[in-house]
Image (cartoon, rainbow, N blue to C red; front, side, top):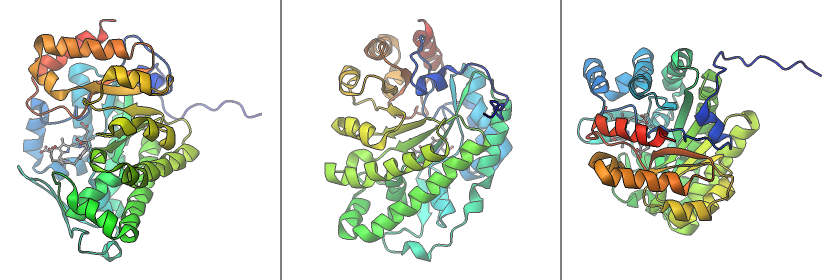
Length: 351
Ligand code: CP3
């Protein structure tokens, strides 16, 4: 028998968030916040102004590593999330990507009227992200879990097809009905590069990964099976086969009553739930051993005061009997007061 080999990283300390993602219960529950590296932090805004565009910041590995670490230095969250974006995958598949001030992302050409195989893939565009992972893994406190991420194929496809964000993803939903073959090829291409991308993040040093499916709530149940559950199940199976020790968090925002099927069929290790889900319903409806992440309303965090305390307490109580990661139900908003984040952390951590 082989002697147990030394893990290649030097980060050996207990990491409570990683333990929970692997199915342990911890008290206090570990906490991090989606979009915790970003515009609500003055130190982020300063670096962003110095570096120019958002994408320039993502491609500057030293700066991106610094942004990843900013919320850890300030708040000591249990998890650090890699600073990048879900739209780097369309960029690597050959679309042009720009972030327009005040208008959000633009991808061209939009695939609603341009064939996928006309694009020239540029996977080297992801190389700076792997370098960011290596730099963060080197500098992160040993007790902090390092999270990589990617968008899920459906959500990424909504941007690739429309060329930008949209209120109801109608163009993409139409294409999925009108031409399921062409649309399926887009989903498959995203899924394949996502497996490769997340695999390389894992090899560069992340401890766990999250799949963001921000727009999964716009699909009918049958379309949800087809375009959300099936590709995510495939991504999970392929990653687990290669990296059995790396937990995968699925976050199908807006999935509502479809959450139990999503958890069962994708076989994610942990499930992120948004703020529209009643924590007590989730505690009942989801398998007892499944780690759940969430689900404070980002607006309650902005409001602060008694309502914040009440909502925080309700989530803590509902999930006290299972592995739970405290988080928001969606990303932290730019106008969130820093003092409210500090207060939330104190509440979550006071046993
Ligand atoms: O702190 C973190 O969570 C790490 C980094 C991260 C970003 N985007 C940085 C970012 C993560 C995990 C994301 C995910 C992401 N990006 C999603 C899924 C989660 C969600 O919030 O729904 C989506 C849909 C995107 C696409 C995207 N990126 C949009 C629509 C926009 C513009 C609107 C906005 O939120 O600002 C971005 C830009 C973006 N991504 C910023 C940041 C910090 C703001 C860029 C800036 O500095 O101006």
